[in-house]
Length: 317
Image 1: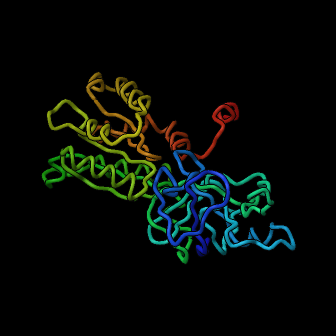
Image 2: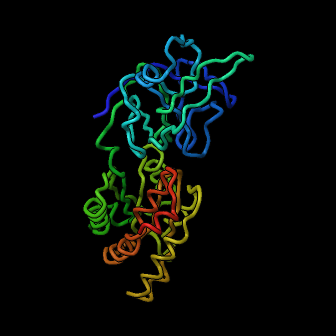
Image 3: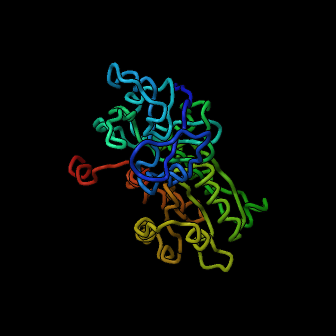
């Protein structure tokens, strides 16, 4: 169990130089600290540093000045050198950060107005991405959570009849079991909603942004009926499409039935969340999950934004 406390939060609108301590920062998913020059759509959205690292690494005899910060969040009680890349930490009541990179080299001393100043970002600081955003103030508790230590998934059954209680949902529980048993996912949500465009959109945004799911699988609403609007709702909230997974599902489906070509399911990314449409039939949904199983772990690893060498992974097998 990791435990610590936020002692300082900082930001600076311009890149470079020292950051300014403030009363509160706002962390935005997929971006970092709002109004900070180093935020953006990359894996080094937020910089973290702990006082034990500062005590351990700053030069003996050098007085650390109050404004000599280059990290966004300064904590006390966390040995970031021992925290692996990919680990997620909860900050306060709402924020979750995922460690994406350890600093490999100490940054050189800064010069302000031509005078050298020691930089409070030693080699053991880390960078992180925002998994779930919100406001963060000094004094907030930092802790690890079993709920976020495992990949998070959600299953959404889209069906007018099942949501009204007229038909038992079988595909949702099947997919939930396959995710939990085969990949050890933490199932953050399992729900049934009607074939309604706005309802589907709102649920996908909630699961991606507020609930910080890594994977969302929908079941149903991918056919040719006028009420089948799951693909349209999914595409409307995406940041980019991942067409290969949907193509794979249809190609493998043809091996079982020619009717597989009628599925209009899509696969997209919203932030770091992967969303895959599957069919409402339990048999078809199970077959489609088996089709994507070989690539699912790698797809989720890449969607986190943590740097990886794909060529090396292929050669290592």
